[in-house]
Image 1 (cartoon, rainbow over the protein chains, first blue to last red):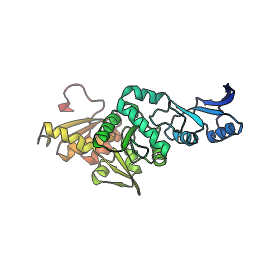
Image 2: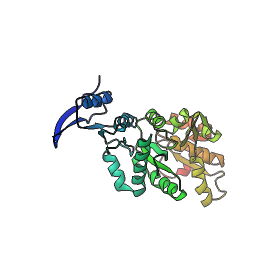
Image 3: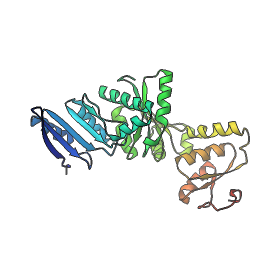
Image 4: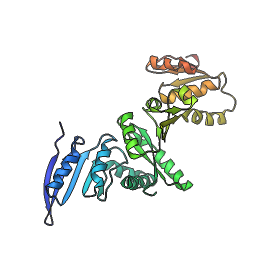
Length: 117
Length: 180
């Protein structure tokens, strides 16, 4: 059974914003959820999920690739993060940034590389 | 680093502790390579494999606990890596993963530089029987050392007999290791 995300509706400067949060994992129907949120006419979409496996980031990448959603791979445990025009990166990448300059540059480079694929 | 940079990484259950990204990215930068190397914390080897194929990873350093899985997943491996039974490096090819093990040479090179020509006949105790221990046993045995493997799981230690080791006691007895 697909995981159910917690949905929130906000209004920012007159534009509706839909957020979906799931801190227990990555919903198997995440792409469908995002499609439904877009169909509902949200001006902005945010998805925040708990990515516990490397392969979880692949579906996040697919969602973020469209460029109309903000995707947060929270505590994904890796410097790999989904990429899109509106990218946000979870806690572990911030830890990487604090740790070492080259690693931070590596993460930025990977972000660029993934977004180009 | 450009959007078409070659992707590499270090794979383990806790890759965030690794300093390999710092070293490799510094080397790429110094060599002028358009490449990037990142930590990849995988939940399983299959998790890594799925991710790597989808993202187009060109190669990876493999560490705990996936060295045996890496060799099993490889389409090709050199003789030493097959003999060791574990791989610490994977390279992506059109046919699939190509595996090698640099642990053997990585262990021997500094040891032989410090103690040239002295490994033959020496007694060596190896603690553990995982992927890295396999490489160390193979390295020491190749130089004629008499190797004992001390591991929590004796059946895993006995698997290293084919590399030229005997199974030592566990826990390692207190006192001089010369008698163990």
